[in-house]
Image (cartoon, rainbow, N blue to C red):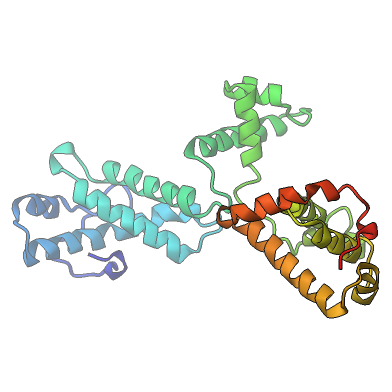
Length: 299
């Protein structure tokens, strides 16, 4: 049955008798009926009555968690879910329902906070370390004349190893994250936000990767194509000037540049598709590549 359908009502099938707390009803008869009744509408009705009777207690257990960043409505929903699970698992032969239900409901609330409310998800073990370190920090910091607790002091106080204390201290900052739009405390005067202090990728790194990737394909080019690439992209020559130096037309230079760049791109991105004859052709012209590209003459 959906927990949102549960709401405390009056006039249930059994008389509510107060127990240890004003919201602790006597539902022993209802639980005995749940054990004996077969699955069906009657059993569902009795279970709903029991749930409605105990719902105020579940809401009361949720109250201490209300100042931890969750709305009261969400906390009540989680507590109701814990109550439903407790009712389903409860065996009347164990004794009263209240001592069984309270830990179950609190456990459901704690699981909710462990699983849902951390901005940075950390393992359960680290969450437990954080709680121990935080409690020890408060105790030591509030002691009269006590300075700021050190890692060694926290380790002695908690019985944890120093590396475990350091993990717990690091997790103290993981429960809630700071927005990148927040102002930087050190430069708040000039309105700088944390986002303004983030680094950017260095385009030089990608340039190094690109150069190394294309280097082998450039070595395989015939000498004339290598000379054209060098004059155009390293010496910044115009196509007309290269045409005059190489003794060919400007249109021919433009076509060679386009073809050469396309070849380099294809061989670099798809090395497995490279034509083996192109490699041999490149190797055949390698003896001329040691000359200065500017001195190359091709008709």
